[in-house]
Image (cartoon, rainbow, N blue to C red; front, side):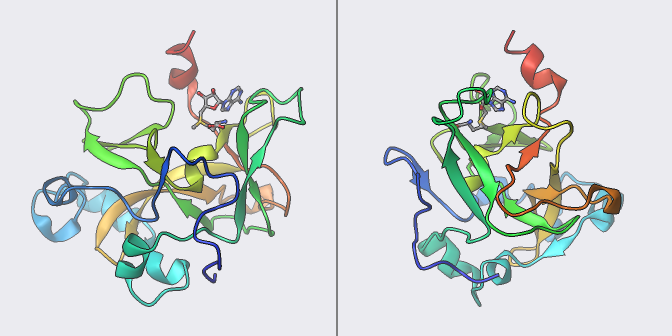
Length: 206
Ligand SMILES: C[S@@+](CC[C@H](N)C(=O)[O-])C[C@H]1O[C@@H](n2cnc3c(N)ncnc32)[C@H](O)[C@@H]1O
């Protein structure tokens, strides 16, 4: 995958910070770093996680470049739903594939500001739990914050949130992956990428 010329994705709002690495303090990062001694993931969970170099995923040779110079991915785009009134998330935005994506592949890491679970926002629509921490893309994030829930859009999700090991930092991060079942067939170019937020997300908003 190669880095795009444009640093900001199309349709990125001017009031939000665009980042392409986790916004995390050194203290909190230790809870995700495998060798830290205080990582909260079990050895069994860690052994089951895929190992991915995010700098290579973006087409860079070092992770520094991504934190210093956030970069849009060329495999996804943020699309306005304003001209699709029957779409349940209209008139806002969704995340779409710009090329065919294979079963199981990482689509995009999910980035935002990392807090402890206790300090996580109760009201943010962009907050994901990551063990004892939370990643909130409410005021900073990447294209991943635009992934919609499949309900009312697809019969079933074509993507899922999953933890993986970012080998650049040897730490656990959260990503959006294509559903891995071969029966699923992957995601086709121009298709909307949709996950399941889980029933809890929606029951908390009734
Ligand atoms: C993480 S955001 C997704 C991106 C959002 N559409 C946007 O443009 O900022 C989550 C919010 O999107 C909307 N959303 C996502 N999936 C939806 C769905 N299937 N039906 C209705 N609204 C949805 C809800 O307002 C939800 O709180």
